[in-house]
Image 1 (spheres, rainbow, N blue to C red):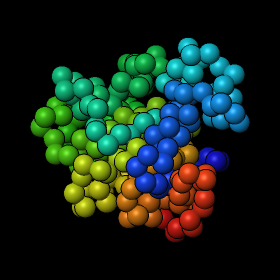
Image 2: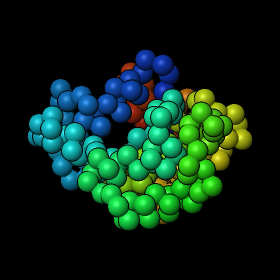
Image 3: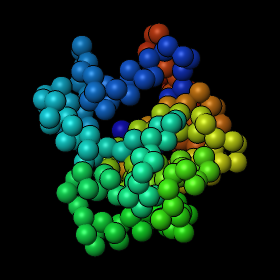
Image 4: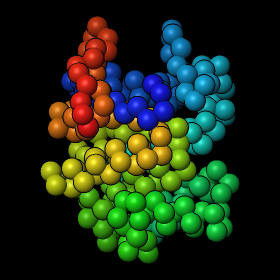
Length: 200
C-alpha cells in the first residue's frame, strides 16, 4: 500500500480478518513472508520497537469505541499525542483541529457517557488520526451504529485519510461500508482476492 491508499477487506467470520489485522499491527509475527509498515520489517523488530512503531505510526478504530469514560473528549483524543511525548500548545492546537474536522469542536469538554454512539465513534476516529499516522486500521468501525451515523463516520474517516495522506485498511462485513474504500478485497481460505475498485 502507498500513502493515501484506502482498502476494505471483507470475509466471513473465522476467515482470518482479525488475525490479518494483528499481523499488520505487529501484535502477531508471521510464520512466513514479510510485513513492512512505513518501511520497517515488523518481524525484524523486537516487542518494544513494534510497540513504539504502533504508537507513533499507526492509528486504530474499533467497533467498540474504547474511550476512557473518566476523560473528556478532548483528553481522550489527546492520548496518542501524550504517548508520543507531545503536549502543551502543540497538542492543544492539533486536538482542536481534528475535533473541528470531525465536527465535534463543541463537545471537547463532554464525557463519553454524554455522547451518542455516532459521536463516540467520531471521537475514536479523531483519536486514531490526531498524531497523523502512516497507517490506520479500522475493525468494523460502524458495527454498533445506525445507518445514518455509520455513513457520517465512514465519510469522515475517508476524508481525513485522504487529507492526511494516510493509508487505511477497513475490515468490515458491510458491503455499504466497504464501498467507501478505493478497493475491496475478500479474505477466504485460499487467500486475499480483489473484488473491485470503487469511486469512493
